[in-house]
Length: 541
Image 1 (cartoon, rainbow, N blue to C red):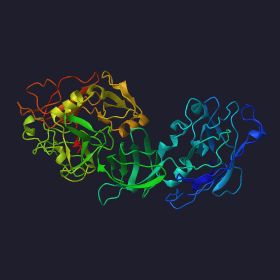
Image 2: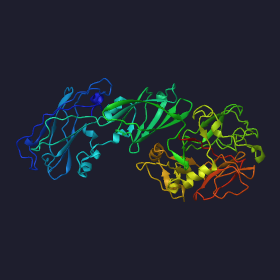
Image 3: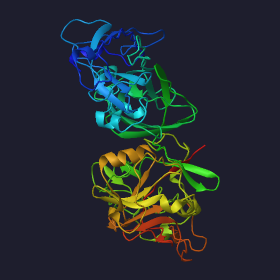
Image 4: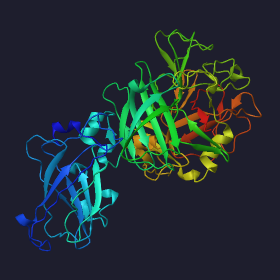
């Protein structure tokens, strides 16, 4: 398709074809000049149809081709591609030359499909393996997988119009045809609340409808984001995640939409108000409660030696932190200049500033639990009491052991050099990459970028192994992960229970613990003084 096609539309197209076939008998497999099929197509914008410019007009250009898929006398779908339009000036009509494929004679009254442009048709080998001319597999939807959010790129890469009809009783192509756009175009405006439009700072947007994943990566700042999608019925759930960069921090947003339909041949304006810091997978943590996970583990940052702390989530789920030794003093202060980070926290109490403390005395951490979810988290809502909270011991245990098919919804994994564990949401789509749920080795699921991006878009959670902190010393950073729960020990105030199905009575504070040789059916407990990871959740109301 040549540069002159930038004016194309994926809005409705009308093609009126004057089709003639010579007098030679089409039952003969050999091809002669008389077998040539000529289509004259007139294209106009239909009523209430939006062009790619939203006001523009569809025109043909030199180099354009059309694909024709017809049923042969052997009940075999076959694809042929027209000749290119020669150099010249074209408006909204053009004449294409199409020749039936040798050995595949058109069947009288058989089905026929036109696909424009021809580049959006599947390969001949794909079509020959089909039994239905109208099979969705005749269309090449691959260009939809990666878009940049602009109308111009849709015109170049994702323009599509289709006609479904039948051959005449004497095996000729229909005398006229109406091509329509089978795609839906969503016009997104993305908000983080009722007044803050973040569309222009989005650096990635991933949409998953359970069948197809669309990744939109803007190459420039956009006020609206256009996405060409396959139509969606109202009974489907659409999962949308977005990443934004305001120059100082990467923020993560999530949204699930149900009961909405995206119809073909339309541009649908959609204003999304996304929850900041939220992943979109739903996870059962009891028989009647589901939660969403935060975009990453909790971090605290100071630039004034610990006088003030900024709380935020890690930019990605697999971030490797080298900042866990920033705490110098028992009172949570630091002596190092510049920005200092903490991401392994002792037991959270009012006396320890949510666990920012390197005291080795468990008594320092005595008192009632202070939930990290009460914090004003910079990229997780930026307001106190925004809905985040820490899972209880019972909820962690239900997640790993009691929810439906729990044993098949997690597995040890490796992303780059980071070890961790994958958790799959309750309704993980069959179309998303599967996992090896054997729990014997980190490399059971060795993830590359493209695989993980699809899994994350489908709601998967990754819990990295950060080890634990004792004062300023990090232990087991690549071999174990420790995640606090909100449940204190019922027997000893020096401890906080880790997830362990048969917890020792003198351990308190709960952590999820996993190791390179598997996830054990018992709790690994920890002193309250130990610094562990925190991954917050939000109830899925």
